[in-house]
Length: 215
Image 1: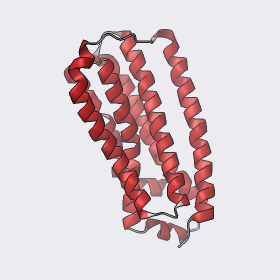
Image 2: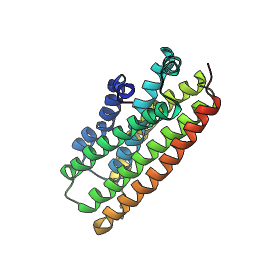
Image 3: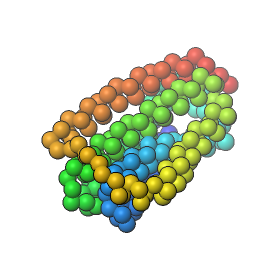
């Protein structure tokens, strides 16, 4: 399983790099409600990004056909596909949440941003899981792969455009931010529920792979 992830390491590294883009914006503008939304949206797109690039390359190289010649089985193949974005989500979330206190002195904004980042990473993982399930149900349809590629790129463009258009209005608005002692358990709950759903999608993807993928 490790070599299946390692062969596309640079694509997943790009996903982690995408997740760090908001840190530069936060360095310029500080952590405000707009920055929290922006960081969360980019995190979701970042978790998707490495996966979609790797999957597009898999289609061009006919990688699944090669995998079918090896004594791996559907479960091991799908497990590798699901493990890589999970690593991206964990690493990116850890780095971003650790850096957030550098951009504001308001503890409430930091707590809210950490919850948003955790939620966004989980959302990205669930999008990955759903995408793989649909891809396998479609028997590796190339149009589905193309949609998987366009989705995170489109999200990034839309979020950047909305952020630049609304930045001044957001910075002048008043918000109530919920943080404090409840941050840790909220993040834990989000992650726990997300992982349960991700495992459920993994099982659905394995079943779809066994039932529909043919060469």
